[in-house]
Image (cartoon, rainbow over all chains, first blue to last red; front, side, top):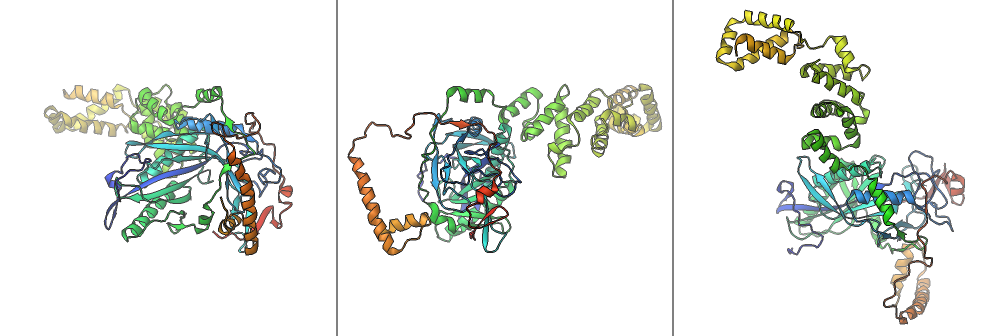
Length: 500
Length: 95
């Protein structure tokens, strides 16, 4: 191996803890992703047939999608707009001139015999994505390009042992293929990047990010090298559609390549498939001979020339992006970077939080949303959209704390009731019904304080020498009042009585 | 550029066309004839001329994202040799 770096090499090296130890020393993963994101449009890229899940076989197919002779494609303006919007969200260059090409290959679920894609002149050029790791640190992944293309139909192999069933409902659906440069250095980084990309797309509304339905999936180009040295030969793992599978597929594939290299072998560039049941990647030999795609410009489609004013108006209407929202949450609400990250990682969380934080102690609201509500939801595998409690109830709870109606400790009890009651009663109603109101009546608190001091003269004497011992008294008074005494009032009274 | 039998065979297989060996031989001859004829175009000096991408100088027409088509399963599968429940049925594709 030589040290001549590829012009594609960003110079990034893996965190030493992410290197893979082989028999002959450490190896580093080098990886780029090609993410396919389905455009959230009503209709297909080149026909007026509906896009969506759940229709009967071939019900959402036009004669264009079925490639009947003489049918001509007409470009969907909305899809072009979504590609531009996504490009802006990736801080990428928007190409004023782009064009569609035909990628020729033969497969039963591709009736045209070619996929309309953009090889030579993609609609979006280079950009970048800032990616956060779990530990709060971040790194940048460079985007190579984003282009529009058609999805293929679906082949179903398990309905008949001797035949394949073809459904063209998906054929012609618009996809954005987002290609990163080979800037990823571990499976963790790949997953973090894929997550961030998904967050951005969902924020922009250009793709719904539903990976279970295959609306967002990734091809992982994996290679290994000695740390910092020349890139190795890569293998492409096709169609990975979950964060967990991505992690597993990359780990398996990297180890497979290392085994081969350490045995003195060489890596053959090929396309591989991830088997989620066996947790391994397998060669897709069938695709090998078909790799001659004979691209050429599609004569049925004119070049796409975008007007400056249109791009500008899309830019003007761009939503607040995750990075900007995070910065705003930190400065506007005084949140920690960690809390801000948790809240902005899903748009729905951020919206929920902002609705609850309005006019309230924003940090306190953040604590209740992240530590209690999200944690509780996560236990059942739910997200904030499934929350039985509306934002107003979290706001109500925080208001009760702020106005000293309940203490933070009692608030936990109130939250329990709120959760159990699935949002039927407001926090104020719960406090009323269960008699959880904080005792601020100094007379009542004073009575408890006096009794406890009188019953524990030795402890009282101790406080004069050791002021920390006051805590014991606070605890006793709280106990005596069922936790409902206002802790500040208790403290004050004790200090006065014990002369601290 | 000369097309040999091996190239014709590859192109045929990419297009899923099966041709006998004799036919491949004669196809190579035919294709070479066509390419030779096209090569005459190389005599024209095109330096400084922008490649033409379309014969029509107009922007790409675009449509609104409104459902105007679909729901015609019978027409879609009308010409298929075999269908079941609206699916196209093709010989088993082995992955």
